[in-house]
Length: 451
Image (tube, rainbow, N blue to C red; front, side, top):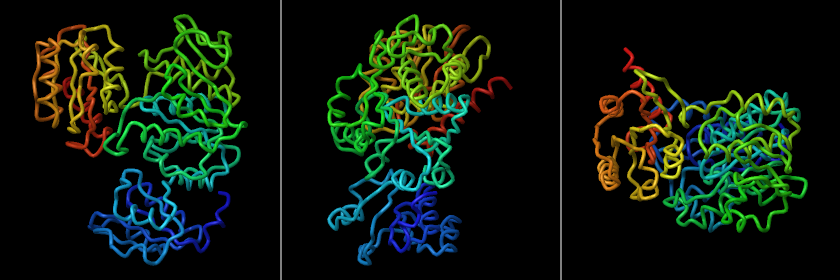
């Protein structure tokens, strides 16, 4: 861990007692900072709070005291999910106190270079693909960030011989100052999280933070098929590496129906790639480009692409039962992700979808509903999804109270050769703490069909 001495004697406020907040508070305390952690929720015997107190951290739970900033802080680290409309954050902005998320802390202490991955969709798949490529290529990768491993914890243990592969959300990227990945990937850009960011422009500007501090010795791998991305990277100083799925590109990485091309030269046959779905080609291209830039042998890259079939909860093949194939796409928390999932199948599909009702439209799915023979609605949006499906001409529609019931109903209306797909197009928070819990319940329900 480098530059730890910069935090000695600093007064730091950490907002949020979740994994990232706990890790940041603990790390900063170890570095000699004076740390206060504040969480709006009641403590209720939280063992993390007591653990931090034993390290000398001041822990305040059950609300945000109006005078919490009166003592003065050098900077704040906030949980990415806390909105900038939070009263403490608004006060801090007026007082010009720097507000970070913990990936900024990870960057400041890391001895290892960082490869940062962001995008509206495909971040987790790209991150996982790249991690495996670098692993087989003996590049000592460590995986971190929004994918589930706290970045600052990983960075504190990393050495100069490692490389951190970091999945970064727009929420995390809003809170960076000096953060500078050696290689940045921007997979795609679609409207998302507008309830948090307030506008599509603010969301895109948050994504663009991934490249704001890069220099010509760094690289930005980006989707050249999307002109909307290019307007937000016009001022980047990074060396640009475009990718396209529309044919050869001599200036970056590309693909057609036959091959993947690096600087216009074929390097991998498309026939060797096992990961299904046209949308996954963006992830494959961007991960491959990063691996090549980081010195991976093509044999390592080809080994991964010929064996990798997906990540858990993202187009995850669960099982085949009675000639029906079941796929878990619980990570599809917006219509774009569900549209991509539906486009991956030519077989008749029974779609299980629904979740937290944010009031967004499902119209983006309409052109991809032709192969959907039934829709089983779950969660707060079940009724709206069923109405939408009926307007698309889907003749079989049902609403269920639980995901277990939805799986049984999907099986009941299916026949041999059908695909049963959980791809909710909605967040999970109406019924589950996260999309992983929703996906796990789906897998459990599918396995019960076999019992």
